[in-house]
Length: 610
Image 1 (cartoon, rainbow, N blue to C red):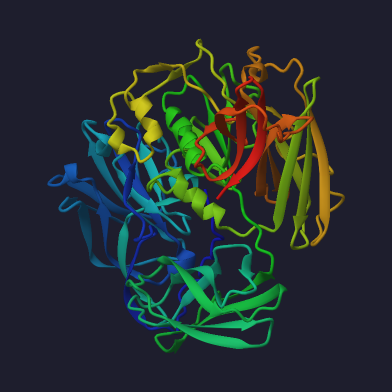
Image 2: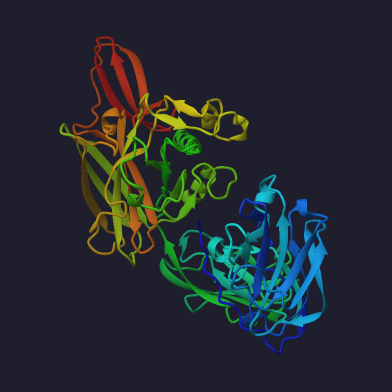
């Protein structure tokens, strides 16, 4: 998953500011509401913390909490406490307690008089009971949203699972959807800014560029105009204005792209971004500026993301990952690079602790070891992983990688990797290699399947249909893109002699000895394969991220020869992609044409279809 740098907590309200009525919630209003819970009929206690370091002196007049619709018309307990019970048996309600009837999915507490927040802070909470679990909403009844700065945003206690107060905000990056109304000394213009990316890269020929940032409003909520300046390399500045599309509530974070004209020199630049004014008033926030390194490049290297999927024949929901990989190979045969690691079945060649990334469940996948996601839906869930891949495909990369691989009569696969960088790298980089098999099948292999009976129209990828129309066990599948041998997945040591330098060509060699290769359960996978190919990637060891990847077919040492024999007439032409899969003659990209002549002789040649 992607993570942003968190803003520092604001200090207590400035005493010079005038009191303003604000609504505050630790949850992000723009994020969808969702439920969490323990799956049982139970009594839940839910709380959030109002930090005295930020809110001391503010006066709380009311608060409201969200409840599932099945609790409409019932009474719940709302309370304020000075601490959470250490024994875990019940919440502390020593400051305020009342009951309220749930209406329209919320319950509201009106305090008899405004309560001033002490320097030690307050816990705002509520308690309710689920008498029977009848659906997803009653199984997961605690209503939350994603949070930007999640400290103190959600504590949960129940008699099952959460038997003592549990900080779920820290665990899950979420917060309770509790809204607190308070009078607080808030400045009219107080907004922080932080970068969403560690580095910004801009093509030299672009007329303009943008910086993705996160804004948090700590001032009045009716912001209508934001004025910001951008200063290049300590010199020339430009000023821009932005009108927010929605009301910017106190404490809420908003994503924004700050656009600016391209005034960069090739190479490294420093660019200062500052939120100067809010509705014409000078911004008082101490985090109103940041300086970003921006790299301006002239060579646009194609980015090839690598998807590493983790799956198994025993896994009921893994067919979706299988279907997605087949779909991506069919629709994006030249650009898509994906590999599958099986575990606990006959295609497994490594234990879970030997995988390049942690695998908490199956199916599971990573893209460039930066995003962890569902291998069919991705992590945006709208609509498939193809959308995540396209975003990654458009990213900047400083590294180019090309491969060639041959196999000799003894089964040795020799690989040559050629790479170059367009910027000096500040950290060590390494290359890793996978030997990948296609066309694997065995009548004894049975794929577990939970999609039988689903309507194929629910899925955008037609490759899911075979699983929707099958039972709980599927046989006869052909498996492609299966990792059968690998180098150190974190990269071969000394792949480069020092940190890679710009404008320098690098060559690295590696080999696999396939003789006698077997899976952990003894299957001779390479002997079953109809074709092999190699996948490699360049890893930045500082971040663990894959900078770029490449793939190439494994050919015989003699290579592919083109026939010039025109004596016997051609009776048949067959076409294959570089990875040995049968293709249509109209398929775009590099194809292998196999020609069969009347005298029985065959020849192969490369062709490019555009």
